[in-house]
Length: 272
Image 1: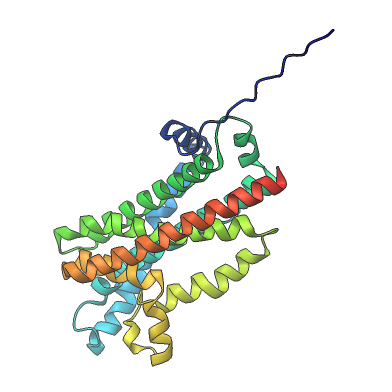
Image 2: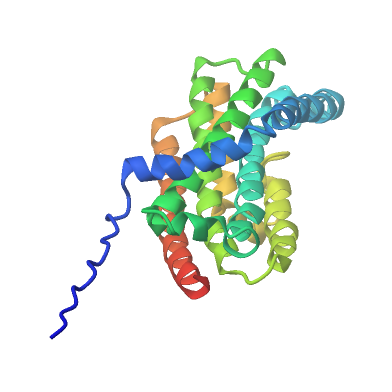
């Protein structure tokens, strides 16, 4: 009589381990090591060119009109800081996510290790957070060199910009993971990111918009990020209003992470 010994089933550790999340993050950091010089150069040139052209050049005309009661550069700089955090988060949360699922299948390779879906998702989101944090820090430095950061509260604008970026990154992770191809990214850019960039208070107060569009602007994460960063950089932030902005952006981030996890789990199970 032959007896067979059942092979023990390998138990995958519960998701969410700090060590496993750090391992997933390490992959993206190693990948970034080959391109970081270019992103740092562009990260410096972008705010310098924008602030010179829009804040100093166009700002001279706007200030002469007296519409804002102060230097246009002071109004523009913190708004651009928040908007750039949004754009950076969007860039890092689209093609890299789809590539990890469909083309390069990085996520599938990670799943072949003890990493779980939550570890993979959180590790990648942490990398995006570090990218947004670095871009926001450079932007603040440039703003200060332009003399557009009159308050010490401007230091708090860096985590505010980070939160703004993550309020976009997490939902876009869910969007990217749920798409079968990259056609949706063009629509996201044209119909969401660009309109928000133009009409969420970055270049002019949203009160100048028609009433219907003005109320739409108030419910967008970028408007909250712009107002939060502007109040901190200029030193005009009020505690209650700032807490409301932080709360709104935090809710967007948490809901986005939950949606991204469910989308990642379904997609990776489907294509595994």
